[in-house]
Length: 38
Length: 436
Image (tube, rainbow over all chains, first blue to last red; front, side, top):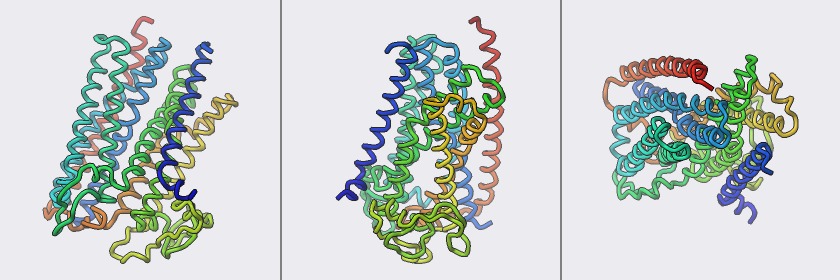
């Protein structure tokens, strides 16, 4: 069951979108801090 | 030289040359958009200068990339007329659409380059969004066509002809997701590291102003977005090979016999048909491609000898790609750990040297990856249907074409280097000449 889900392709979609959202969130936070906005 | 070898060598040289520009054509618009965005939000001459420098570089590279792309389309018709004629009904439409994707990109690039004083600042910046989308679409379409050659779909094969084409099935063929994600990720990561390498080199030479640091940070930010998707794409491509092209996967690992719980061999050499001096992770390959340590992985001996890809180039290509990929991950981690916790790391010469090495090496990894993809499909041009040897032109001028086209690429390289040098050499003088 786990192997089926891990090979289904959804794991790839979840990993890629989750990673990009994380990098964006960290980038925006760092940007705001360096601009003195928050 | 044997005509088949000459024809394949010519395509190899052409694709190896063009892929560098194709990758930069995908990545540089994103870098430009990011740098320009920062320049608009924080009016700062450093970011304005970075944006202008990337735009000038991109413009020169687009010209050379267009020429080499046109040459490849001419070569496809001259060298492989049988392939183009038979596969044309299926892949002709996507290839034509790539032209439109390029027009879309080129029109907005022209608006961007010539619209600075005619458009509002944000409208000017927004021109870069279609440029990014156009580059991505081009990459998607061309890699999909290549994926179709690996796992052809969307047709009926009748008497040696591909009939009743279904273009959607052809484009969304089984290999497409892995190949597209892996290649687009590679294009962004390689471009990011190339940018980081340019400014890292300047820092190693002692120029450590905000300009160089900003260039390094810009490149590494693009790397940060795409390094994990690049790895996920590679992993997905491996799983799809297991399902659809087990002979290529077996050649990548030099797996001779079918095994349940096959090991993953990292590095080493192929000597007398066997892996030597590598590190083998027990059941690693089975776990990777099937997410189960007991997955059965087919070995090369399952396939007739005349249907096996050549092992050495595929295995070495894979080893080089994975080895460089590991170095890229180290460079990425070192830089961002330095930004997060240890700023002194960013001044360390060895860290900078690693980042500088990652620039050219990431393009070597792209080339090695394409060696795996293309050599691993041999002896087929359309996997399982048409062989490369059946598709070569009957012309007696293949040798001559190899000579002429290789000469053309040498000339293009000279033009590229001199154009880049003259464009970029003008930039600091112009910047100094402008009142601040």
